[in-house]
Length: 450
Image (tube, rainbow, N blue to C red; front, side, top):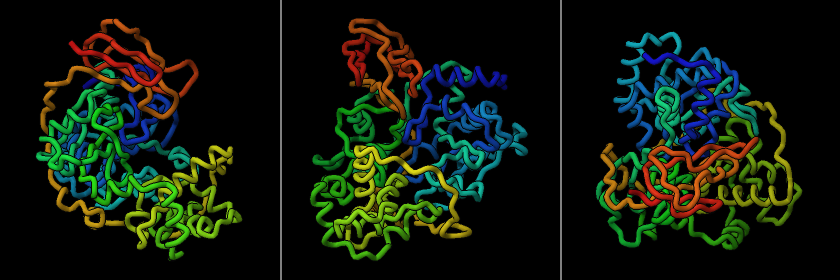
């Protein structure tokens, strides 16, 4: 068993390796772990429909998950670690429980089995499920004595601390309208079209790509690179409702809101944050927009609380409107107008006991994705055709990394290409393979391999 380093050494090795939250936001892990808490929660819920990478990582690399969790606990001083995962992840549960017994960790680490619902992986929802406590609105898990870390992040933490390995690869599930869905360990910077090819390619020649799941993912192009936070690549026909929702015109969205909103409140009734007692009221915001008034300031500033999970649009609204989109636009407008986010406030939950849950199979059916709900087993990634890595300098929360290389420079596999600016929030960037730097810009570094 590897010896656990001192706290400062753990944080420094995580920083040096460029570890970020792999679950989506990409918050720099060395900053997140620089805290003192009672509990570290490993997020293995993976609630986006069709996503498979985290559940397969727990089954294939349970020792690394547990080691990363132990290191996170050592860094934060936490006495307890909890792995939150779906009860249906039978193989992962069996492998993790066996190792917990073998390592005699039962008094420090346990599993928390979750029902198969969306959005179980939302940080606020997961903390409520595991601890029974609600994070205050505009607050952080620290407010209830917890830190939450994605299981893939924990695997990166173990590699960084024990072996000095930087984050250069990401496990990506390729699903949807593809010939052979699969999960692949892909070098960061790889064009998405090569990940798509590894899954046999799209079965519809006009398919569009979404980086991320069908609920929170964004439209992207085949040439865009895999990043540290890319967990799922979804290919769907252009006319599919999941794609069409993302192609709606902004002006038409607002027009439909004014003309078609029934003021039924179903969007608010399914909102996970509202159920936690947070002042997020999609129905009130929609009513205000429909009426063209701004008196309900609480409804407008409440948009800052939106996690953009999409339930209000996909599962709540019977008129096919998109309150989530409206919240996203409102957040941007409030920020432009320098309207501040309200301060964290403790509030009573609207619903006591278990929160209302949207079953994932029902959500998949509502999304029109049942035919694509297929296994996506772990398979080797064929790097043939990979000639360049395009490395974004901002794959994380914070400011972009500063280039540490120049055009024409020969670099080795794992070499640093982007550094954190002094005194800023950020993460380092490394190259997964040896090659020659052919482009250096404010947003990307491009490496020609070989």
